[in-house]
Length: 65
Image (cartoon, rainbow, N blue to C red; front, side, top):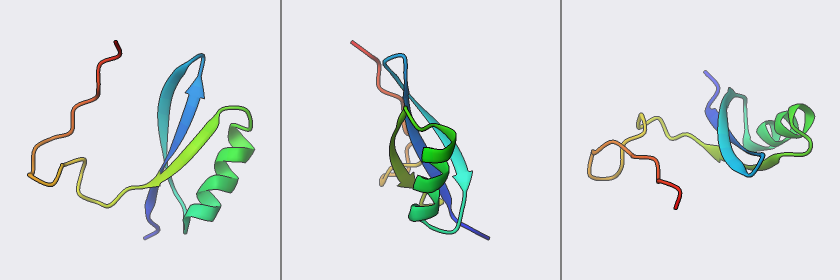
């Protein structure tokens, strides 16, 4: 099974993510540039820990201030 990557997108000043399953980071970037040429900002590989931090607690989204 191919790894999961999050495409980091900026749309109307807000950051959003879209998860894609591709073979490597280069392919994730290509896909992001093809689908979202004006708003792709980054690519992050998911590590399979199911969004848990090092101490096992669930990650919480930051609140915009």
